[in-house]
Amino acid sequence: MGTKRDGTTPERDDSRSRRGQGGLGMPGSETTVVMTPVVRDESTSGLLRELVAHLRQNRTQLREEWARRITEAKLLTAMSPEEVFAEATAVYDNYLEALETGSIEALETYARNLSERIIPRGVETNEVVGIVLLLRDVLARSLFAKYRRDFEQLDHILDAYEPAANRIAITVSVGFVQERERVIRQQQEAIRELSTPVLPVRERLLILPIIGIIDPQRARQLTEQLLRGIRVNRAKVVVMDITGVPAMDATVANHLVQTVEAARLLGATVIVTGLSPEIAQTLVNIGVDLGKMNTVGDMQGGIEEAERLLGYRVAPVVVETAAAAP
Image (cartoon, rainbow, N blue to C red; front, side, top):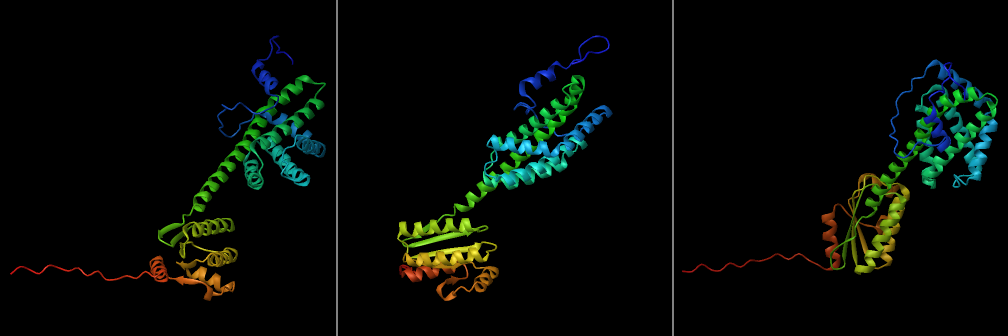
């Protein structure tokens, strides 16, 4: 480990202890993440340049070793071996750039984009943390092999490497967690939109107000809710109001038409209200037979039409007043 000129041991017990306890792993869960610019002295910068030069020289071997260990650890199983290798290559190069420059902006951007690609495929947080730790282990083993005959230089190299590697690991892991939280919030919002109620307003009459963007998944959900509501309430007429739908592509428009037809097969007539000019144009462009669709301008008109179809009629109320006493 080396000694100072005065014969004392360098004060590095804490860092050595941490290295021994956690390998070159992540800090504890109580660590506060504060990403501040790193100020390096010339000695540290020189050591990192030497380290990065070694890692670049052995890039192919180390990258392949990392990809192999990812597969052996059964991480990123939702991705093909080719995809794992491609992502490993990009992460490796961004990792070295962050080590060399001390800037994590490019790595943050890449981590965010990577998270956007892999979260929808079911990749978990523990997998992302796992691959980062595996990379640290692969690089550390390479450093130990290079400097195994010069322990003092190895000690200095690790002193320079560990803080930078910790920062990189935190950056990637936090970026993934933040993106995952964003996706969860989006999913929660989608669930709220999907919970569009089918409202029975009177016997045999339902109202289905739709608000927000309709994608194919939501369109299917609305169809299921509507058909279930028709069956449960034995409805004969449904007023489907889409005033709050800003736009609709051809796929969703076709699904809307199919929903109307499915309701008809169950014995219910669907009155569509609140068609915007854009949605009306979409229906025309996809060749919908508008003769099969009952459309009314607004919800009030739709309810009035529904009541007419059900046989309800509005009768004036005559209020008789008592004759005045003589």
